[in-house]
Length: 296
Image (cartoon, rainbow, N blue to C red; front, side):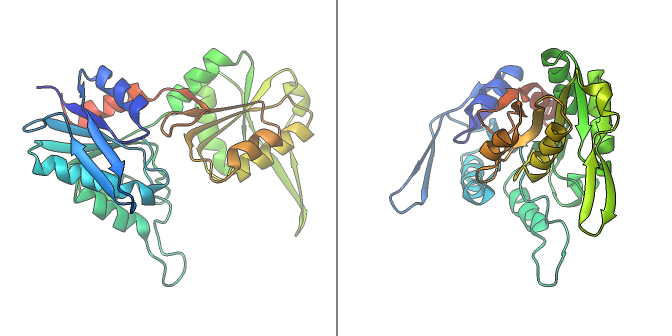
């Protein structure tokens, strides 16, 4: 019997693509709010004995986690054989240590909460800065997939003469990998410190690249401050308006508008979070990960 895929509100596009990829069924889940702000859930597609897959990207997580818990708990009570969560964007990964006394290590607590309600987890490019895998904090089976090959593929097909640019030395490994897969050259901005508050940022061998389209790539575009600064340096060097690519389109506050106003020629993201900038479909990646965690 095929799995039933239930999109939580705002996740319909990825859910429908996933169901098609794995020959699953799209289930109907009624979700609405009571006047006092509490949530109401009702499964209209029978799930007794079925594998249930919930699709919920967890940007702005504080308003989205309770619906996931209610949906998972209800599915289990109604007899689902397993309940998995596809979270294309997984929140609460950055606070992975106590940076200052008294702080909460929220990534651990968040993982404990989700692990207590689901049977497995699939996500794309979580922020594993100080951890080697999700298994360090999640107690359920998980699969992580990486969107960099899809980003490289998009660059190859959409930009005839790209130049990938990394904002600093820390980005070099990531940018180099995407550039190699895209068959494109890359550079990393050079910083020359002339004093405590005087840092000159330049594009190496700038004259070589004037006929190429600069491409800036990052995993998460949240405040977009790093990208905005890099766009400024690229434009100051006399290069073309850059294409800015992000895997996760968080875009806090007015970040998207500010990035456009800074001089970005085009802003492109993966559809891990629904946004007008989505150009790169990750449903195939998600389907491959789901098959690994839960053979269908």
